[in-house]
Amino acid sequence: MIQDIGSHKFDIAYHGIKPDMRGANEHQGNKNKSLIFTGDKVLVKRPLNKSNNKSDNKSDNKSNDKNYNKDDSRNKDINTGLFDFPAYAETKDIISDQHYLFRLDDVYFFRGYVEAESAIDVDKIFRDEAGQSWKYEWQVRRFFRTAKPKELALAGITGLHLNGWYLKNKFCGACGAGLVMDSKERMMRCPACGSLIYPRINPAVIVGVTDGDRILLTKYRGREYKKYALVAGFTEIGESFEETVRREVMEETGLRVKNIRYYKSQPWGFTDNILAGYYCEADGDTAIRMDSDELSTAEWVRREDIDVAEEDLSLTNEMICRFKVDIEN
Image 1: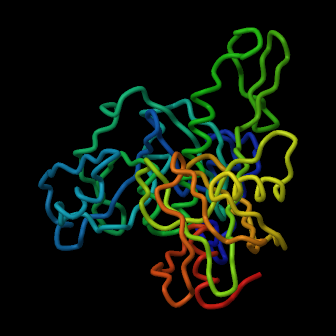
Image 2 (image 1 turned 180 degrees about the vertical axis):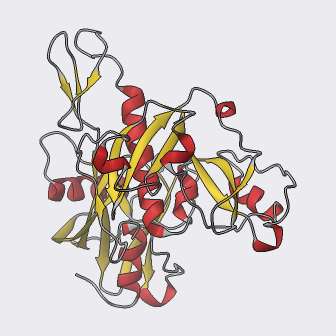
């Protein structure tokens, strides 16, 4: 899954470190990175293929929410899939107001924000000390589904989750006064009425409903994601995860379930969620009564007929693939 980054250590705790503080600047040198946002996009830099390292030719590499993969296939200069984030030293003269996000291994990440994409020159080609040529581009959340290295993809999608929270919490919902960042916690504080606002994380469940050697696979209605999924839904106030499992399965497919077993959890910054995965068994009648407002497909599929490949990204995919090879928790 996206959070499985091997020996790398992702420290999400808030430390209130400033970019130019002694520990963040002098000790780290140029290793610290900036996540620069505009709206719901983040600035990345992509390596040019070695055959183009000596070229200063400019090419149109601008991406958008619908066709960044299409752009990559057209532009043979970009080393597809690989990326990095700008070093803080590259951005501090453009965006001086940057604040701490998190740490990956011994590298600090800071958030900066610009009001327009044009604030960054994405046509400029530049080289690092090793002679590798790079180019900036703006990317959206979907980019990080396939971007490498994986630990930076996790940092990117987590940064986008936090950026969205900062953008939506500039003013107090209780009194309307401007909010300020707290110096000790990842929190926005209202200096007028004392309200405290913490990052929004939406709890949801992913449910693998089984019936012997069959698993219930679904497809969402009206969503861009068209691959097979599992029953899923958000937890209501006052509801346990296990109660959410029973309710969501009943609402979406009309099935009763038993033997609910927790499997694993996953942070899912693509939609600002924390996901809890469960397996359970159909209880009694296995006839599906699908909610066509929520789903376009709901069907029982035998292990040998599951047409889903491992992708090392999502909890849903891992749970389906575990059942496919007869490994179930």
